Amino acid sequence: MDNYEIAGRLHLSGENTLGAEQAGSHASYLVCGGFKAGERGRMVNPGKGCEEIVLGLRGNLFMRGRYAGVLKLGDALHLGSDDPCFIDNPGNTESVYVIARGHAEGGHC
Image (cartoon, rainbow, N blue to C red; front, side, top):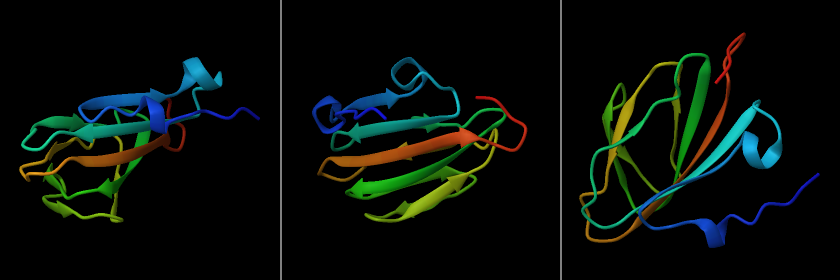
C-alpha cells in the first residue's frame, strides 16, 4: 500500500489527479480541484463506462447540467456514465472539491 501526499499538490485553480500513473491501476481515480473566486465553466464528465462522486470541501459550487443547483460544503453528487456537469464559483472566496471516479458495471474509464 502506497501513501500519496495530496494537499501540497492542490492548486486553487485547476485539478490534480491521482490515477493509473501513480497507483498502477485503472480501477479508480481521485481528482482534487480548486477554483479561484469568480472562476466558471469547468466540465466534470465521468465518461463512458465510469461514474463519479463530487464532494464539496470548501465554499459553494454552482452546478449546471443534469443536476442544477448549489453543492455546499460537505454535500456530494453522484454522476453517472456520460452525465456531464459544469461547475462555477461565482462567489468571492476560493472553493475546493474532490472527485472519486470508478468503473461503472462492465465499464472502463
